[in-house]
Image 1: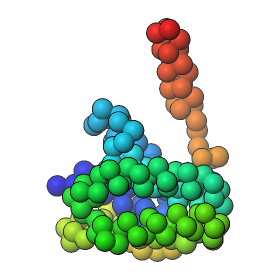
Image 2: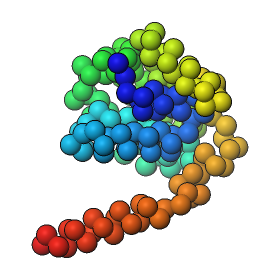
Image 3: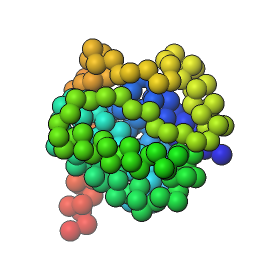
Length: 173
């Protein structure tokens, strides 16, 4: 019923809080399965993870900007949010609260996305256990490999993709 990548995203988001990995998982899924619309609900989830990543690193402006974009997308897809197994009565106020926290530069606090579908919840719990972490734990702000993941990763593929896109763009002009 739910894509495996979405379950994996939720497990990381609500488990080990590896928001960078959340971004990677859904970005790949989004690229492979959609027309790459920037208004896709998958982009909303990607931006939400990016916002949490920025907030935890005290990049409040980045957190605010990406969360505003995510909220706009989720608002466009509010009916789909229910289909994604989320309790929208909790989800949307939670997003608004996160935006206020970014605007007022409040200290990062872990959140748990409100899953309303028991089958989705169970699948996420299983995924957490499979990956070796627990659902609902607070973020380990001492874990440099999660907190500063973008600085520690190999960017070779990203750079190659950007160069190829630039080359294609210049070829089309």
